[in-house]
Every structure is written in C-alpha cells, then in structure tokens.
Image (tube, rainbow, N blue to C red):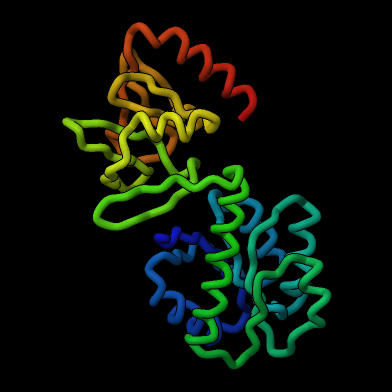
Length: 245
C-alpha cells in the first residue's frame, strides 16, 4: 500500500533535539512538518488551529508550564484526537499512555532507526483509522502497480477511450478495473455516475457550474462532467448530502 502523506506538528523545547528530530524526519518523503511548538501552550494552540493536521510528535518535557503529556491530555478533552508519538528521557508508566492513546514512546537518546519504527507504527495507525472511517472498505487499483485507498481519497473515476483513471487530489492512477465495476462496488459510498464517463464522489464536490463539477481538494483544473439529463437529480442529491456532512 502506498504511503499517505502525514502533516505533523512537533513539540520540543530543546533546539538541538528539535534540529535532530527535523533532520531525521527529512528522510521521510511522506512526512511534512507543518508546525513547531516549544511550550505546552504553543502545542495546544497550534494543534487546535492548524488545518488538516494528521499527527504530532511531542516531547514529554516542554520547559516551564505544561508538559507534553498534560498538553496532549487537554487536547483530547477538547476533542482534538491526533495520533501522537511521545518522546521522553524517562518513559511514563505504560498504562498511562495506553489510556491516552499514545501510538508509541521513543526514549532519548534515540536513533533514526528507532524513530523509523515509531513512524511505521504511526503510519499503520493512521491507515487503520482511515480504513475504519471508510466503513472498512478499500478501493483496489490495478495498474502497473497495485494500490489500495479508501473512498475518501478519491475525487472521481474517469473512462477515456477504454482507459480508466482514478483521480485523487494530487495524483492520477490508471487501473484495469472497469468503471461499471467501481460503480457497483462504491454505490453505498456516495459515488454517482454523473456521466457515462465519470463516477464522482459527491462528498468531494465544491460546486457545479453548467455541465462541470469542481472539487474541494485537488489540483487546479480537476473537474468532471455531468450529463444534462442527470443534472437535476444529482444537484438535489448533492444538496441533501451537504446537510449531513
């Protein structure tokens, strides 16, 4: 399975340790640091306000004030539930972190190999979360490589001259599975055949203009088509769906 991009917030009050962590994370192409905190209050603020944040890597000690574990607990009480790797010079009792839902505990001093193991656990945890949120459903893509992704990752599926293309926000994958098979497989996931050549994830539509469908996330210019005879039904269905999203 391909690796999903992880947008991570790191919290470390020691500059040398922060540089070490950043250096290790630079070797992971699918990891992107989107925020840095050095205190508990900064951690809480950034974790609350940063859009599309995927995970956190938090030192248990963050200078004066709240520590990393306390700040993490406060975030959970506020409904911010982010998979987290805890870094510490002295590991807390396992039952404490288990109850809080910490993915892994990395003790200092640590190596890149040890951090890699923690990142793999984090990646698996996130993949499992996405899988369950998708109702336990993976969408297979059989091309030159075999991929599996959740319905939430797909904007639309397109058929062009017998070539089937799966469009995600940032990539396009060719697959050998017919669009009609995908339509049947995804019928309970709000995918709709808006046109004979387009199977669209209605949950990802941002707006509809004329015969064109535009998407919330994706490279500029990504759009699907809607057949005139289907437009009224699809717009009505989409408007009703938006009320529940």
